[in-house]
Length: 259
Ligand SMILES: NC(=O)c1ccc[n+]([C@@H]2O[C@H](COP(=O)([O-])OP(=O)(O)OC[C@H]3O[C@@H](n4cnc5c(N)ncnc54)[C@H](O)[C@@H]3O)[C@@H](O)[C@H]2O)c1
Image (cartoon, rainbow, N blue to C red; front, side, top):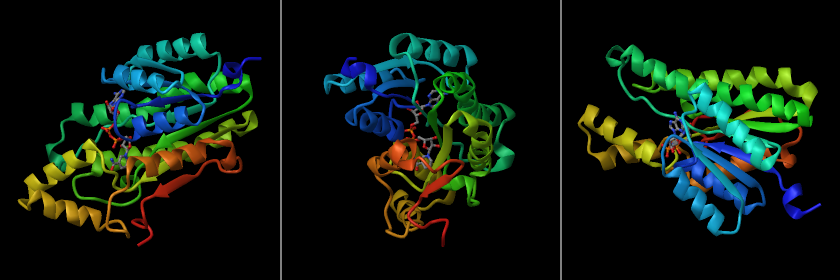
C-alpha cells in the first residue's frame, strides 16, 4: 500500500479565504489530502499554493446552497480520493442589519448558505461515511448562535440552527461511528469581521477604531482570534484525539459567552 492510500481525506468548504483557508492549510500540513470548495474563484489559487507545499489538494468552484454543485463535488472527491474522513462545513455569510430592513430574499440566502450548506454537504457525505463505517463532521457555529447582538438576529438564528443540527445529528450517526461537532468562534480577524465593523461604525457614527476596540473587549484577552487559533480547534475536534467528543459545540471565544 502506498503512502497516498493511507492518507486521510478532509473536505473544507469556504476555503478560499479566512478560517476555511487556514483550516485547509493546517489539514494539508498535517498529512491529509484536502478537497476544498468555494463560490469564490480564488479557491483555485489556494489549491495551487497548497499543492506547491507538496500536499495533495483538489478544488472546485461551487455554491454550498446548490444541490447540484454539492453532489458533483462529492462525486469528484470520491473519483479522486475514494473516501472522505472529515467534513468541515465552514462556508458562511454574515448579514448585519436591523430586522425591518432585511428583504426576504436576503434572509433566505443567509439561511440557504449557513444552514442549507451544512445540510446539503451532510446529505451527500453521510452515506459515504456510513459505508466506510466512520467519519467526523465539524460545522461552523458562532458566538452569535449563543448570545444576542444588535443587528445580528438572522445571522445568529442561522448559527444557533447549525448548533441544534449538530446536537441532533450525532444521535442518528453514532451507530455508524460518525462524530458530529461544531466550533463557535468569538471574533476572528477576517475580512468578514472587518466588514461588519465598518457597517457598525456607519450605523453608530463611531470611528472604525473605536468600534474595533469595543468588539475586541468582548474577548477576555482584549483581542480577536487569529485564523490559526480557530483552525487548530477545528483540527483537534475533527481528529482521533477527540474520539469521545460528539454532539458538542466547542466555544473558541476567549470567555465571551462565559461572562
Ligand atoms: N470571522 C469571524 O469573526 C467569525 C466568527 C464566528 C464564526 N465565523 C464563521 O466562520 C466561517 C468562516 O468565516 P470567515 O470569517 O473565515 O469569513 P470569510 O468571508 O473570510 O470566509 C468565508 C468563505 O466562505 C465562502 N462562501 C460564502 N458563501 C458561499 C457559498 N454559497 N458557497 C461556497 N462558499 C461560500 C466565501 O467565498 C469565503 O471564502 C463562517 O461560517 C462564519 O460565519 C466567523
